[in-house]
Image 1 (cartoon, one colour):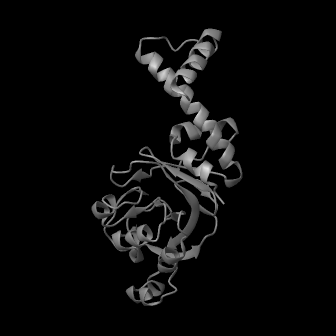
Image 2 (cartoon, helix red, strand yellow; image 1 turned 60 degrees about the vertical axis):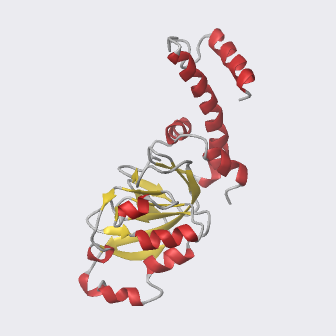
Image 3 (spheres, one colour; image 1 turned 180 degrees about the vertical axis):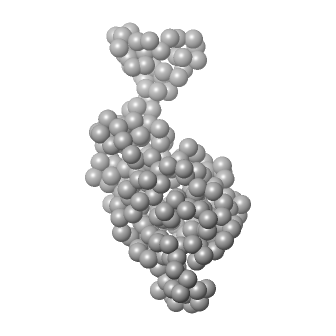
Length: 238
């Protein structure tokens, strides 16, 4: 389970910083490709453990509108089963020709306390979803119902989303730039390192805006840069 300290730390760091921390450990492909926030009202990072839903291409004889009458339909069941604090991640095969979900389902996730929703396809009712108090990420708006292109099949299994492997329980972090996937077993150490990296990057940014050269500062190859950073940390209680 994602502990409170790690969750809180991950809310304060950028996906860019997290990608660098992951790269240091040899993980190069953790940023979900071509997935963007729906709306820009998000005030803090989306953070939660992955709860997955997998779509396959729809087959017409198995995907009529009447399938939604079945209360065990995987899409509907996933919305009701996704735990509070988790992030629903949908494998839509990067196909945004039909919606992965719409505003009613996303609203249900929101009121159930789910931390966010991500698809590498599209959402219908995207203006309404963008106004909801739940982070949502997709490729682009898509009005057609999911049944025209997608068939919901598996819940909480390993999936691919935007060319990234996502395993149930992986830690998902989303900011205004996109979404990164952190293996659960290293989430704590990645979060702690990213907080440290963020402090240094904030110091560097202040120095660069004052006119200082990046040479010897970023990275801090000069002892003076390291001394200046320690003084800055002390003064700013970082």
